[in-house]
Structures are given as structure tokens and as C-alpha cells.
Picture (cartoon, rainbow, N blue to C red):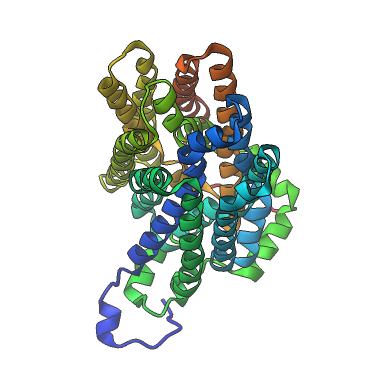
Length: 450
């Protein structure tokens, strides 16, 4: 393979591991991404006490983020394919952190109605700003990792959602308890602004990165990595020949991709229960304090993180043992989501430690099964990785609109979380149905030209 740089023989022979540094960076960014989404779930009880809004109104405020997040996915995917992950992701991190920071000031508006409106608007704006994040992660992983490492890499960045809960949920609960809810938004917003500058400085495509050896570059490329990442001219021609909205139709009418997209919606019902109502469930249904809920919520998160990493390792291990990509991805997904159904069992026990154990087991299973982003990196057309990832994320985050509102109504009308937990468990079963019945062979889709 022809190299565009001069390298010493020693440098050529040594395979560097820069891809792991890139993975660490997107893991950290995704941790902040989920921590910023979860700020309201931790501060929500204190804010409800201050501003006096009910469960239904709380459900709509929770959903504000996802309305914008879903509506912005297709534009975000187009921007990623047009301008690349480096610039688009930097702008995304900066803006969502700025909107997080501004949420600290809503109490200055003078009335509860104005504060609630401002909170809805800022959460909506934050959702739009975060929309490129996960498609960008998938695009970066597709560029930096060969197929036999992609499941683990995708599982690691996806497991950041649990790591965020382990680290930041107790921290944000303590900040709320000790200094007031405003402090949470100040700390998270300022930290994110610095992170956006770090990303801009560190991130490059594998073929352009000065610290990547030719041996590592060749290893990534020969293993199926898209090492040149953002190739504007070639991509523009390919997307133009596919025909704009015709390209979207091709992706949405592919049975395999549609099954993957639908499954992500169902998986994210569990995610958004955890991000929105779970700490409030612990406070209202289980009688814990905010500080106790923050600490207890970290236990299922630890299990989810462990399951997520294990699922990726298991999937890539099956590939290295000679199993097909279809078997290697489906076995952890189906097995993990069947395990997640045990969340319904919380309705039938009264002891707090058993509830926490069942929640932990459910989120361990959800972690094992959360390989959707690896499947997207495996299957999306190379010319439209950003767009396919955006559609996948759009489907998944419709759950962020539906879940908090449905649970809000169920809690308000019944005075109980029992129906909410059944709703979450049934969506885990629908994920299994989607992968076993709708998705058949998992393989990369080729665009139809013209």
C-alpha cells in the first residue's frame, strides 16, 4: 500500500494503537453526552418542588430533548457526510454544553411558568445540538476500527451511558443536595465547553493522523475500516447518484436495516426510562431521598456498563472463532434483551435490595444486547455512514419522546409505576422479535445507483 508520508523502518514495522486513544476520547465525550441528558432526572425532584409542576408536565419537559433530537437526525447525518465528524462533532459538543450551562439560570425569570417554558426550550435546543453525537461515534468507529474489533469499540462507547450514571449521577445528586440544583448545570456546562476544544485538537482521520504508523493504518484498512473517512468529492458523487431522498428510501426499505432501526427504538425505551423516570421512581415509589436515589441508581449502571463491554467482547470473540457476522451480533442482542424482561419482576417484590438487584440484572442484559451501533457500522453503505446512523438514531430516540410521556400518564392516572415497568419489559421482548423475525443476514448494504 502506498503511503503519503515518510517513515523509518522501525516505525513501519511497529503497529501503533492510536485507535484506542480515539476510542477513549469518544467514550469520554459520550459520558458527558449522557450525563447532560440525565441532569433533569437527578435535579427533577428539587425543581418540581421549587416550580410546582406535576408528573404529566414533567413528562413533557423530559420529552423536549428528544423531540429536537429526533427531528434533527437527518440534517445531522447530512452534515456529517458533508463536513466530517471532526468539525461537526466539535460544534455539537460546544452548543449542547452551552445550553446545559444556560439551564442553571431559569430560576431568574421570576415566575414558575416562565421557568418551565425556558426549561422546555433549552432542553429542546440541547436535543438539536446533541443530534450528531452518536452518528459521529459510529462514523469514527467505522473509520478507525476493523470489523473484528468494531463490536467491542461500539460497545465501549455505547456503555458510556452507564458509566455516566455511575460517575455523574451520585456527583450530581451530591451537588443538588449540597449546593442546589443550579450547580449541576454550571459544572456540567463548563466542563463540556473545554471538552469541545479537546476534540477539535485531537481528532483526525486515520490516514491523516501524524501518530498512526503505516502498519496500524494497513491493519485498519485491510480489516474493513474506512481509513480516509471524509472524502468529500467521492461521497458527493455517490450520494448525488443515489438521488437525495431516494437514498433515504433505499435505507428505509431495506428489510435488514429497518429491523435494526425498529429494534433500536425498543432498546431505547429501557435507556430513557433509566435516564428520566428511574431516580424519580426510587424517590416516589421506594421512598428514598434524592441523595440515596443518586447512589442506588449507580448500581444498575455499573451492571449495564459491565454488560455492555462484555457484549462487545463476546460478539467480536465469536467472529474471531469463525462464526458469521449474523450469529456474532444476534446472539448477544437476543440473549441480553431476554434477560432485560426481568424488570417486570420489580412489580412483585417489596424489598428494596431485590428491586435494585432486578434492575441491575435488567440493565446488565440491556448492556449485553446494546450492539446496535456495531451493526450500523457493519451494515451501512460506506457512502452514507452518517445518514444511516442518523436514521438509526432517529428511530431509537423516538423512544425518548414516547417513553417519558407514556410513563408520566401511567403514573399520573394510576398513582403507581407498575404499568410503566410492564411497558419497559414488553419493549425488550419486541427487540428480540425484531432481530429474530425481521432482521435476517447482517451484511453491508450496497447503494443502487441512479
